[in-house]
Length: 236
Image (spheres, rainbow, N blue to C red):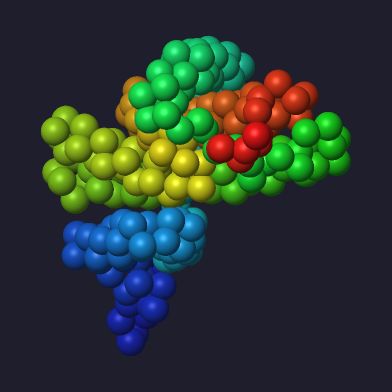
């Protein structure tokens, strides 16, 4: 970090404060606490915290796994992401979701997306919005910031990584409360799969962003085509 005659710059001091063990622990505690109280607020705080760290470290995205693939590796990466997406969809949506809905007697609540059905403009708009806020934004917060930083605080060994992956997956499901109990469970499992993928890919975030985006695109498109029930639970 650059230092002048008067000592470390404000940017350097902020970087040390936010990336030190104490500072990181405080940021994680506040983010998780806010998610318990109001999920979107916690997500917003996580996004601000990650942004502050990126600015303070002069946009060093490698801390959160924001690195570009090596030349010639983008194609294989996209193919792996597509395979992971199809596997996740088969496991979560085709196998797990019906079982969870039957067990909880509560269908997945997708009524928030009801207006999407048959509306091309809404479909295109939501797809673009999803890639920015969900695929990139949520992966930056949950895998790049929360999971990666919690693992560091816990020692960054295998036990710490397992614990960080599990804790982050639980909160990832919790912030999707608007989708009902079934939505929380299935989204939590999806968060667990994304967390596992993060470590499998060497702590790189791009594979998670791609899988998250492809997975959500499948759901958005099925709703647009009218192949998914978006009526509120209990509606006649």
